Length: 224
Picture (cartoon, rainbow, N blue to C red):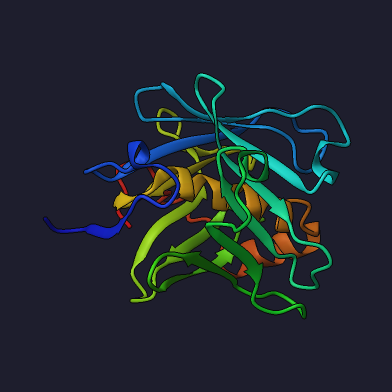
């Protein structure tokens, strides 16, 4: 079948779909960087959630991705010290379940200036590599596999009834058929920790240069 990636499950098989999936992601609080999230499918059903426990939640160096029922499916931990802001992903509750090695890691490609983000997935017998390019602060970035194929993308959300681009606290996550949605959502959480408190001047400059196409906005019918 065309437009299907062969990546398969990285976090959980149940979140790998045979059709391209479009999620609406919402920040559940706007007051602090690293706050909670909810993610809904195209039918409005809750798929993922990340709970926030106050202003210090983003400083713990750990974030937990849960399914709609509250089951922990992925734990992300910041590796310290790390100049590249390296994060590691563990299945379920991670170390509490006896895991001593992460299933993937995410880091900035460079510590200087704007840079892409490199993702390493640890699979037997070899590793997989992904690159995230674009600006998460502007909600305009794409996840590429090692063949430079786009497998997931983050875009500004558009109200289809008014053709108005919504605020950055609501955005779209489109995931290619055959690519793990839970893994893609985990990457969103890491990007939020790395870039979520991005500089306003940087955001304005990027939007001026690369911009969001309000004339032809990204909608849920777009393809990767």
